[in-house]
Amino acid sequence: MNGFFNKVYDVVKQIPLGKVATYGQIAKLCGNKRMSRQVGWALHVNPNPYVTPCHRVVNRRGKLAPAFAFGGIDVQKQLLLKEGVIFTDEDTVDLAACLWEA
Image (cartoon, rainbow, N blue to C red; front, side, top):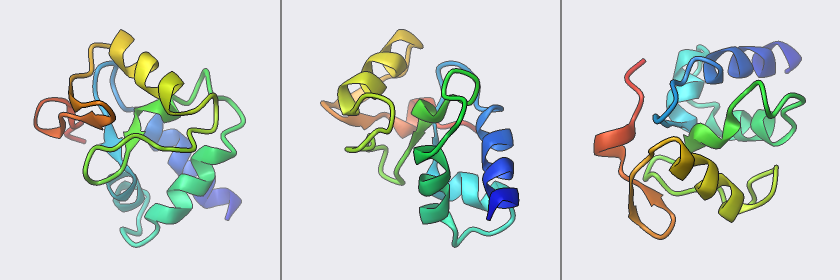
């Protein structure tokens, strides 16, 4: 699984400032679209949160992670807001405006 986690980190590092990607999108870019849950696990144990911007990954509906590993949902939202990410409601990113086109 370590090899897959490293692929996840490499892909997540490519998400540009002000954009987000979904767990499924990351899984597909890593070679297996069915491994979105494993993407979440990889991000939860991200050893370099300031190098690998895991806060830029949301679920398929644009919802923030309720158990964001590095400080909770409020920290994830604040990090995204600082980057100019637009929200449609309290905890949902506007995917039409902010989804990364890999």
